[in-house]
Amino acid sequence: MNTELLPQRSPLSMEEDLLAQEALWRLLRQQARLYAPESSSLPAETAAALAESIRLTLGADRNPRILLAPDLEEQFRLGRRRLEQKVELSRQLWRTACLTMPEMENRSLSDTLRSIGGFWKRYDPRFFAQNVPCDIDYQLSHPVSEQLQGVDYVNEWLRRLCLEQKFLSQFDPALARAIVARSCPDYRRLLVNLFEPVAVNALGLALLGEDPRSLSVPTPLRRRLETRFTALTDAESDAALRSGAKSLCAALGIEASQTTRYLDDLALGIRPRLRAAVEAGTLEYVFLEVSSPA
Image (cartoon, rainbow, N blue to C red; front, side, top):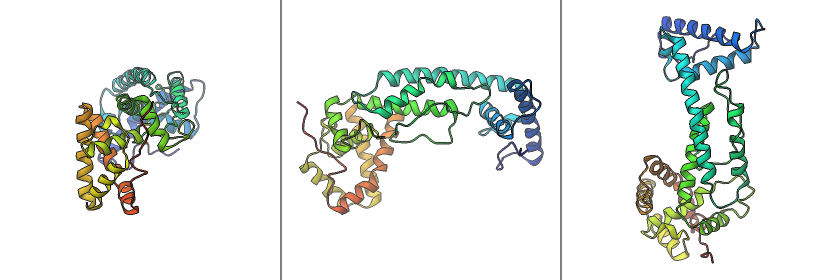
């Protein structure tokens, strides 16, 4: 097994780095005895996973100096307690996500939430806090960073899903379904995001000062958007899209900073697609038109 248990890029001095590695080795030996009390050795992969779990529990990747703390074992216990609190938060977020599912069927969303529902039975914060023992297949509009691990990844994923679903709840369900179906007719079975087509259409309407809740963007409005963006540089387009995201939040009464940032990122993210569509001469597949539901 590689004896270098700390990241190669460390803010610690050489002497501090050696002391930190010794402290981590002591905790690793302690955890190894608890994990396999009847064994005098562990496979290298298991030992490496235990060490990774210790670092995550302590937050040592963010703050390597915690390994130099004189009360390191107490810090480790506090870290375990924080993980337990995060697990309880994940239960609450999961319940909220289940209760706020949009009124449109999507197999990957249902399967993902069902799998996360068993996360707490399989998650092992004591020894393998970095693991995510569930299948998360549903595609968010803004994916969660792979740098997050374990319950931190699950919680951030659930937070973003709850945000997307709360946004969708502000629109007529039948109209929202029509927009998603126009974007992807087989949305029930495919790995598609339900939030993004609705949000993009609402953004397009907000850009024109129209009611974003009407959702459908008919040909005359698309032509106005085409005319507007044809003459803009990329920087000017970004500014216009950000202004549109701000108008969208105002129109829907959205004040939560996480949601406003999410929509701002969405707006900036569609600029390359918008630019390509303008150059192709039509925004028909960016801003969608649907008939009003009966």
